[in-house]
Length: 305
Image (cartoon, rainbow, N blue to C red):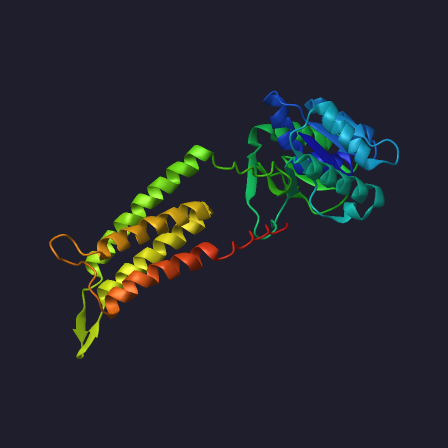
C-alpha cells in the first residue's frame, strides 16, 4: 500500500495504526510525502514503513515511480484539511489520485470525525497498534502524548481512537462483463421458446374466461394472459439484455397460438372467432414487436465522490 500525504506527521496522525498493522501482517507500507522531515521519517522507519519525499517538480512521475517500486495495490490520501491548501501538497495528492485512477488502483480517503455522505466506511481496528502509533507521534516536535491522549502544537488534545477510518473514493478494477458464449445464447433461446409456448398454451386456455361485474362482462382471463405474457418478455429483456432470447420466446408463443387456433380433426376450436379470440391472436405479436424494438436505455453513471 502507498500512502500519499503532505507530511509524514499527517500519515502518522491519520493512518499510523494502519501502517503498523500492515507491517505486522507482513505487508509493505510506503509513505510518499511532499517534503522530508527527519522526525516523522524516523517514526515511520521505526514502524517499518518506507518513507520517501518527492524529488523534483514532476509529482505524477514520483507517484508512478513509488507505485512501481513498492508494487502497491492501493493508494491512501489524506482527509481534506488546511494542509491541502499548500501548493506542493495539493499537487502531490492530485497526482496520486490521477495516477491511481489511470492504473485502476483503488484510492482510499483517510477520514476522521464525520465521514462524507453516501460513502461506505472501512474501519481498521488498530487497538493493538496504538502503542507504536503513540511512540511515533510522541517523537514529533510540538506533539505531546499522555496516556494515548495527543495534542498537536497547542491544539485541543484528543484521544487516539482504536479504529482508523477510510472510504473508497475512486479507482479499482473496472467491472468486466463477459459476453455470453454462443452455446449459452442458443440454450437461452431454446429455453425461451419452450417457456413462450407454455405461456401461450396457458393463455389460450384462460383467455375466454369472463366474469360479469354490475352486468358488464370482464375478460379477466384475457387480461391476465396478456399481462403475464408482457411481463415475461419485459423481464427477459431487462435481465438478459438480449433481443434474441426475447425473439425466440415470442416466436414460441406466437407459433403455439397459431397452432391452437386451428380446428382440430374432431372439429373443436380452442380460440373461437370473436373479439376475445381476435385480441388474443393479434395482441401478443404487437407486444413482442414493441418489447423487442424498444431501445436499450444507457446505464446510469456512477455517482462521483
